Image (cartoon, rainbow, N blue to C red; front, side, top):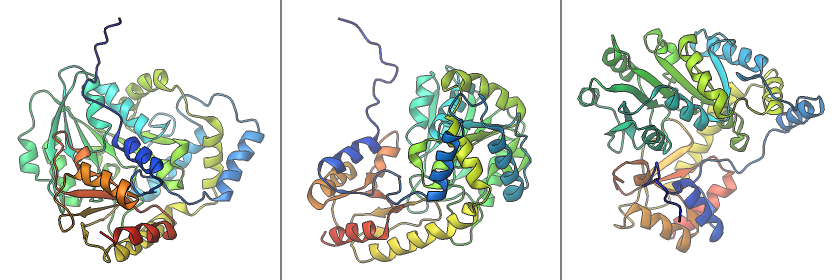
Length: 381
């Protein structure tokens, strides 16, 4: 017999895989995992096909297809008045999660402490633990999930190496405000703390709010790695193409790990995306597109017994189900699939201590007909 000393002994299959499989097994409407069920722009798929036909089928440069990096640099200048050099400060990655994994691997060693805000995207904590780091979670409270920065300060120690922020936030749909950024600047001033800013939903923000990217603030940008995602931008989560931004000094270290992780990202996708973005208004259109979906889904949900929580960004709507059941959220979510036919994510899965506030997360990046069918089932509760 082989003895295995697991590096992640308490980690199982992600809640996203679990709920999506359960949905498939029971032929339920899947509002759990965050992916669209509508088609991709034919101009985009045509651009990918043309890249393949044009011979772009071999390794891309390790840092990514240069014209695409140049377009990213132009977008950052336009959106945030921020300058990132495409040669030295932008790297194309195999999706946002790979960028996050690589960033944590680059800078966290055994004994380092990392502050995260829970509920948190589920790859943060396991990656930190994999490297022997210590997760210092700060629990946010429903319904607004505001950060108490004075309390966060108490988590700081001589071993604090990194802070991971996420706005717009998965799973809650909350966003950081200017006062949050000001507090973060104050807390990290004159320290060696690195900020990992997960901004994959940066263009999905509602009600006239401005996305508070760390790229807007030189005091933070100089110590930050920013993660973004073309999957969220282009409705193509299965393509797994994203990117990471950082000052040259940090990016040089990031690339040392990146090159031995995936080396480079598939070439035709990068070339096709680059060519598509030359004539696309997707950056301007995305906010309106998803706000319409959010507003419609919220309108439909008001026909149910669920209590809606605020949703300022992302394509996730959280709801409280206390008016329906007192069951644990994990049990209620499974019951929702097997007996009602709708899949959601129990938000306790995003907490280290599995905090159960009777809250579920629905994904509304779906056809209106899909959302309508789901609500038809949910109104029976």
